[in-house]
Amino acid sequence: MLSTRRHFLQTASFASLAAVAGPSRAQERPSLSIPPLVDLRPGAPVTLTARVGETEFFPGKASPTAGYNRHLLGPTLRVRSGEEVTLNVRNELPEMTTVHWHGLLIPAAVDGGPHNEIPAGGTWKAVLPVQQSASTCWYHPHPHGRTGLQVYGGLAGMLIVTDREEQALGLPSRYGADDLPLILQDRVFDREQHLVYPRGHMALMHGVQGSVMLVNGAREPRAGVPAGLVRLRLLNGANARVYDLAFEDGRNFHWIATDGGLLREPVPLQRMLLAPGQRAEILVDFSDARSAVLVNRSTAGQQSLLHFAPAGEPRPQPVPARLASWQSPTREAAAQRRRLTMTLGNGAMDGMPGMQGMHGMPMPHGFDGRPFDMARIDQRVKLGAVEIWEVSSLPGMMMDQPHPFHMHGVHFEVLQRDGRAPGPLDIGRRDTVLVDAPVELLVRFTQPAPTVPFMYHCHILEHEDAGMMGQFTVT
Ligand SMILES: [Cu+2]
Image (tube, rainbow, N blue to C red; front, side, top):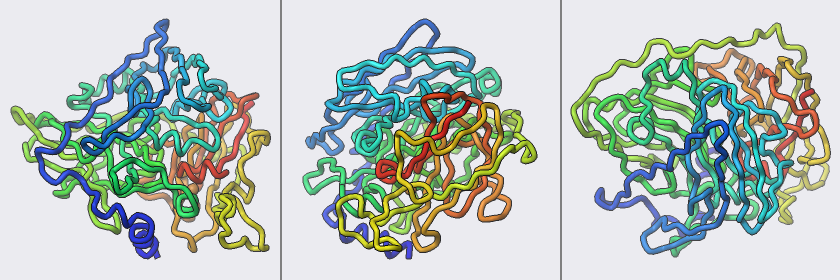
């Protein structure tokens, strides 16, 4: 079933893109673009300006794009845990936007969700009290109904939290040298090699997935790296694609961090799934000085994402045996259990005839059969509470569409998947989890949301925009 649908996607909708592939010769490969690093410090506000621009994804073929302070994507923001930093977000887009700090544990009032609207021409001052473990987070727009388009156009950036515990480990930390931010995205281009954002039933049902793979905004770039241990901060910034990452030569790497920060100890892996919105940090050993290719494996075959060219004196370095210590809440601490069902509609919202719902009615995307409503609070949680959230999706096995479930303002851990103890890839602190089977999450609510609520939603952005989102207060 999976292969049938993917095949249909590629042949029926994207046939014109068949000729579009990565650069054919090594010398054509662009160097990996490293977004500028901005260190945020208390008392030194930084301005982020969302604006439109232009990007040549293919030589000589400029496409309209958008970015923060740049034509595409945004600077990498770095903040030390324990510090309060200020950002002034200017909106020079022709439409309303918001900026959500995805992964930050901060009060909902400054979370940047759909309620923190910045009108065109406006500026939003966000004071962020950052008090969490070292982690790889990101920032992106979150205006209800327009998130998919704005992110797709290029509005996204990485946000790195550091702390003493992480710094003491001696992990590769030279930004852009042996500590690389990698924003993974896929895009659709038309026959003339211009960026397009597909609309319609297919996009609404499956989310927008393109055949052209980008890393930091470029097709199959090349990264010069030292012949030693290199840390990759992987961010799935795609609208809908789940990446299945591996190296072409099958080499091992060490997984060291999830959305919420460092694992307790490194986990050796050969492949890793990364759902939209998720981050992972891995350590890759290039001390064999051999070139390597990061690839995405799919039913359509293997797609090259990034070529690594190690250089310099080979320097084998050990991977630390232990990483971070942190406390998990106990299951017994859970004060309440909630059940949420992500419901995939029938596409009728888009004005498409579509198939009809069970009772002949059009059915929108939503939670528990209801689409998102800015004016409705769906869940009310006590500040400081630990709860168990059971999240599943409908229709279940009929639609092979796993939804990445994201919660704002919290970290959670996976207690169960499909009624069983979760596998080794479910460990760690998270804010986004792939719901390909019912999951049971242990959630700790530490951030206040008394008036402006936090969001939970599907991170397939076209699902989210079409209503697969809910909101909760924390008081
Ligand atoms: Cu979804």
